[in-house]
Image (cartoon, rainbow, N blue to C red):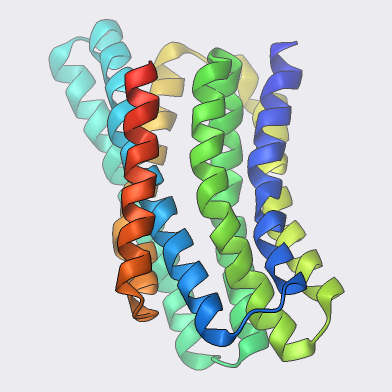
Length: 251
């Protein structure tokens, strides 16, 4: 039963990307799309940083300190966090180089899709493994991922739609990106479930925290700022931060 629940959580988190893609069915003026995307990105980065600081890192760190001792626990925890930073920086570097060479709308949408597949795959493994251990923690992580998957779905669907005027192509590309998450969960079940332990899960969670914090600060925030919609950026951050605080107080 735990396995089915973990797979469902990962699937819901991944396919939330399609929800963002549904924006193409609404008639927005260009300036309103920019406001919506800027606010959504700000909201998601606040959620990502907040849940990393209040949930992922503290809980995982306590387990590492208990299981491995203070010195070793700190060292391997830092290594996991730094590994997350390195992974996202490397992926961002690859995508940035590609975007410099190919900048039309359709190719931008495809590049966004490929980038998000790389992001969603390890996230699927993380949500499965955390849900397998603690379904409540898995749901929290999946919600954080879903919040940033929705605006990411917009980043795929909007350029593809306005390049091709094909809703089918736009939604299909967002689906391909989102389905990478449950695929990651299935791989975790097939090949990694035997290795699941408190220490292993804690390292994965800290790795994901490193990915999410770096993704939020170095990639999502600059993209949100480019839309030049400071009021919506501020409201997005404040609402995301408020949701994290409420969640923390309730727990």
